[in-house]
Amino acid sequence: MKTLLPLLRPHYWPTWLAIGTLRALQPLPYAVLAGLGRGLGSLIVRLPLPFVRIARTNIGICLPELSDAQREGLVKEHFKSLGLGIFETAIAWWGSKARIEKLCQLEGVEHFEAAKARGRGVILLSAHFTTLEIGGRVLCDQLPGNINIMYRPTGNAVLERFLMRNRSHRAKRAIPRDDIRTLITSLKSNEPVWYAPDQAYRKKGAEMVPFFGIPAATNTATSRLARMTGAAVVPYFQERLPSGRYRMVIHPMLENFPSDDPVTDARRFNELIEAQVRRVPEQYLWIHRRFKGLTADYPDYYKRKRPS
Image (cartoon, rainbow, N blue to C red; front, side):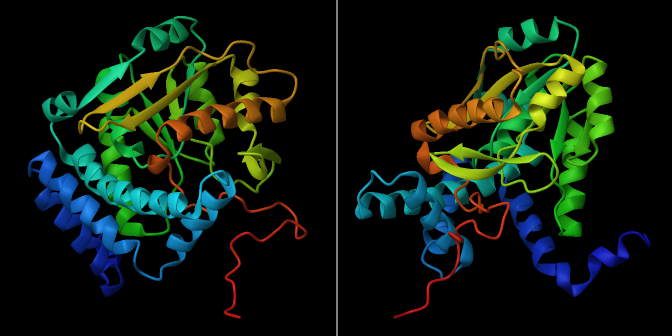
């Protein structure tokens, strides 16, 4: 009980309320949850919030070929997708396996099995789309063997508790992003690890790698992990279909990977993400400050502009 007391402070009451609301609403029909999510997103995009501005900036940087009206339309659709993703998370956390199977189709399991048959571990390489949580649930439910999930800890202790409990319940283990030793041990034991290294990364091993043609601080560790362990690297992407169902695709393992150049390998993965973003642009997580530089002379794309 003592360990729970710090989580009951007033600071966390909004988080408890949000989680409780999602838990209560989760059994509702999918169409109702989808409507609530899109409505929530339509409200959020109208608010003067920093991440709304970040999304507009990212879309403008990455998709300059769109007109102003098209970009603004994409921003609105993105926040509808983001709102829906919140309720998808509730389904991923508390929905039954039968409900998940009814909503989702997983393709390419044979690619996973071929990679695992090599006996040296599998890195299921993904990216941050609004469908990420439900994509992880499908892997844990439908793939043979035990899935390890690598994740970035959050600063909200209540949310972290729920994330850890959920992921640890579904997966063999949840591995914090900085726990490289456990990650390597899992791969050397021929266990699959699912992770998404596509967000801005400015620690040791970071390199500026083009993403949509713009240099972005990128984690190049995937190459080193594959070289150290011999693990197969298998791209995995998910998308929400217009029908309300979900299509998850495990692609063939990357050939000639890793190469002698980690930057080239990271660029190759970035290009795979770009192709998926162009398929479902509203579903990518545009609210993340992806274009943060490694040095002070790098452009500050997210600096708030002062009114003239």
